Length: 261
Image (tube, rainbow, N blue to C red; front, side, top):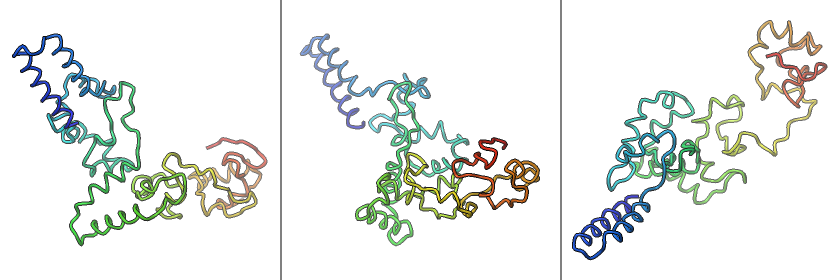
């Protein structure tokens, strides 16, 4: 972007001089200027920023390009982003333009997630850490891993797998931390489901090792309704297998599909 702007400014100055000296006719100068303008005009803004279409300097600084400081000027007080656990990391990220691409048209989605890009941004922020510090050691370890290691499975890239998934997704952890924090060992970044996962046998009686019963099961609702519907009035909360089937939580033995929560 910086280079394009510099070229545009330089050529515009040359064209203006050439026209003033009579070397080029006005029509030729206008045609070339129009072509140059299009070469540095990336395209229409998204709907969210459409009101800034005629105010380039609201986001751009001459010669420098998109200025993160100007993004922060508008978005620094966005508490819905900075106070939510999954998106709180924005407070420590020093760049906006790498993830949130503009000039892609009115219907563009500015929040498409690129996990590999997050790794690049993090590595760039760490590379100037003072030698001997914990951050410098972590950076060197990551460099070695990205150079020598392999991804844990074929549905995730090595760059994605080095991220600390739990730092953003701990609220989504269905395993209640029982499986540790290395989510990439099993999960990919495009979906939580694992195609190759095989549920334990339908005769398994250890469901509560992985599954937590809903709050209603720890109230009178369980004995008064849930257990009776399944025909297991004496079942204990941790005996999931007494009432549930592995096809779905709402596929209740004896009752079939039953939605009552």
